[in-house]
Amino acid sequence: MDSKAAKTGMKVERPAKTLRELALGNLREAILEGVFKPGDRLVERDLCEQLGVSRTIVREVLRHLESEGLVSTQIGKGPIVAPLDADIAQQIYEVRGALEAMAARLCAESDDPTIAPALDAALAGIRKGYATGDMGHVLTSTSEFYRVLFSKVNRHVAWDIVNMLTVRINHLRSMTIKTDKRDVEGPAQMAAIVDAIRDRDGARAYRVATEHVASAADIAMQIFADREQT
Image (cartoon, rainbow, N blue to C red; front, side, top):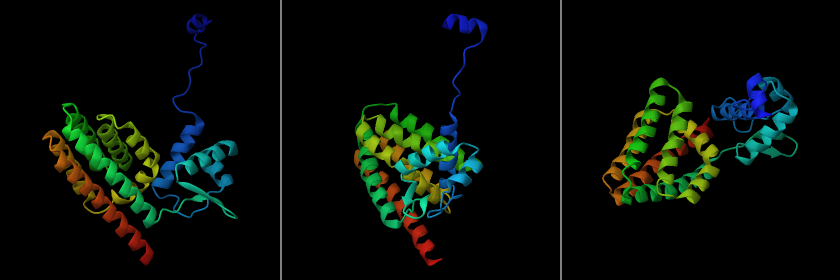
């Protein structure tokens, strides 16, 4: 049967992405880019029109985003963009700092010569994203940098934990990467991590990875403080 379908050209190819996946990606990006701000109501009827999909798909997308921590449901309001306050952000940075520093140290102490080049490639993607003003590419390449960091030393459980926080981490990154000089300072700090790994200096890798996360945390805390004053 498959051979007949191939010969007649009748075989239906599955699209690269379903409508649900496309709608999910578009709404997630809109939240991360600040089109919808924390506390904004997410009205199903309006989202159906804006996304061009059915209410069923919108409801599925909202449930998925709620599982990622980007959407919350409040009695009397319905779905809203989940507030991201300084306390939650600080806890996320604490988890990041501990796990990423551990992974950086293990990478430096590893005998795997492919780690530094793989991190360099991801770092090149980050710099390219900044150079072209493509913040989406910056976020994607940054996620790849840390995927390499954890996967190369088989810390899959730690990476799973980080992945659970990925969307909220990227929400914070979407705030911090646009700040003054972050396009230079961020990649430079990450390059210092790679240099320590290349030099097989575990203690230095741990320290500079910790400092990098602490720097991002300081920027985020200042953004939250500024918001409270406006």
